[in-house]
Image (cartoon, rainbow, N blue to C red; front, side):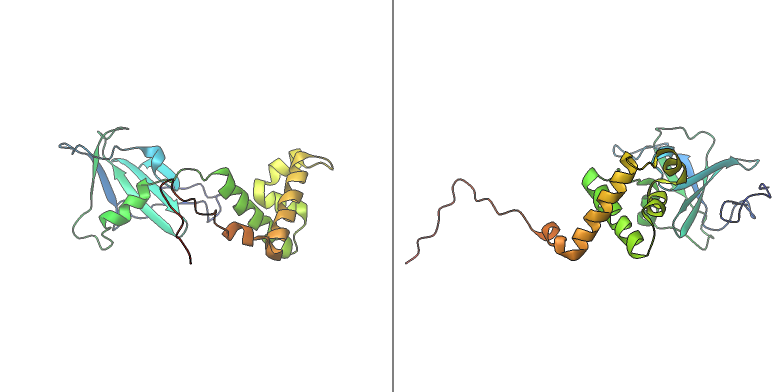
Length: 195
């Protein structure tokens, strides 16, 4: 497949061999079980590149450190139960459990989890010597910072708050994250008699 020669090496994804070893074929399941998994293109985790290679639709999926290639049967449609097939001679025969991760995009984490992650990112950035503006660019992107970074803006206040929160956590505040709520006894529980 030809690629745009102006693309950076990190963005260009040429297909040197139309069907490399380990390619997974996805076909409609002709006799699906009651709990068959429906095909959902948008639930496949990772950065996706779908193209037609002249014979069929090919899908390349990138996750950090991993690349997987799929071939989609022409009759496979969204919501159909599907099966996976791999040629016996392929060197990188995937296991059923390993392939499941490619179709298991996880739900977006809750606000508390995102807050903790962003707090630690801001702490790491400031400890590495980054300015608040540089840290904000890493967090939300340069375009957002250019548009929303003002002396009394909400973005700048948010970055300051995250940075202060990270410093508090670093200086011992993390202990409150480790505390568990007190155990509540059931209504039938009786206190033990002590001598």
